[in-house]
Length: 216
View 1 (cartoon, rainbow, N blue to C red):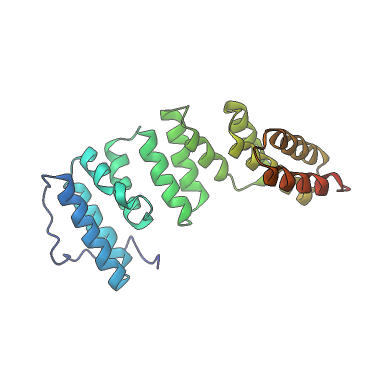
View 2: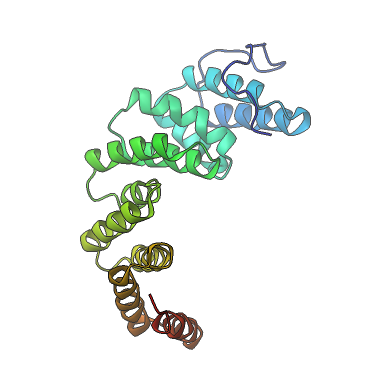
């Protein structure tokens, strides 16, 4: 499905002329129409071309509002937010939105990491930017170090601490690293103490039992 989205010619999509838009609903309807065409012909390049054309004819705030109903459709989010971040290079939320869409479509850690770094610089308190920055590190040891930084900056972020524990356990197993194992156990123990339900506590207890039995 994700084929040749950059070298595709730019045909005029029937019923979707290029011009400025006066209402957000008009723009949203045209995006919906373009998406319906794509679902019928599976032509991702044509969809990208159409949405890019629509984005260029729209005011940025109206564009962001119009695309909100399609926030789970990366094939719409990507061309829209590629345009948005050109207009608003330091909009951390927009950078994170595009980085996340790239991530879930497998665009690669380098481009995702670059966008995450830009988002962190624009808004150092944007937690999602920090999460993407950590996820984008391809080396497991480097990823553990990044999740440590995220957990230190947001100590109440259980998702970051769970990612830290998981990656530390992976590092311990892959490289027979006792310090990484200790970090994983300590982090899981902290999560166990904060677990709100018996089911979560039992799952963490099983994980801890396994890790405590490792001989590195």
